[in-house]
Length: 62
Image 1 (cartoon, rainbow, N blue to C red):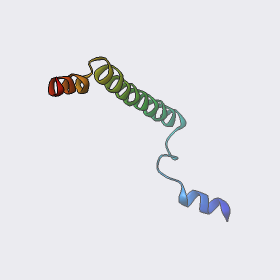
Image 2 (image 1 turned 45 degrees about the vertical axis):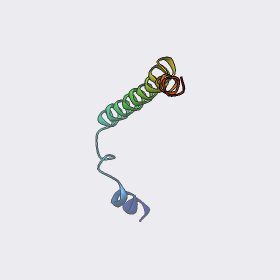
Image 3 (image 1 turned 90 degrees about the horizontal axis):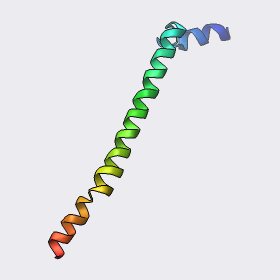
């Protein structure tokens, strides 16, 4: 009876072949890495190196 409840609750992802699941997992990990590096790039290079807030403050306060 426990096996029947497990099969009823399985998702469509679980019914995919293992190779397809692996490729989807790798693609999601790559997506997470790309988003992480994009956030790092935005914070580190754009905000800290170019310092737009500091330049704006120096323009306002002389």
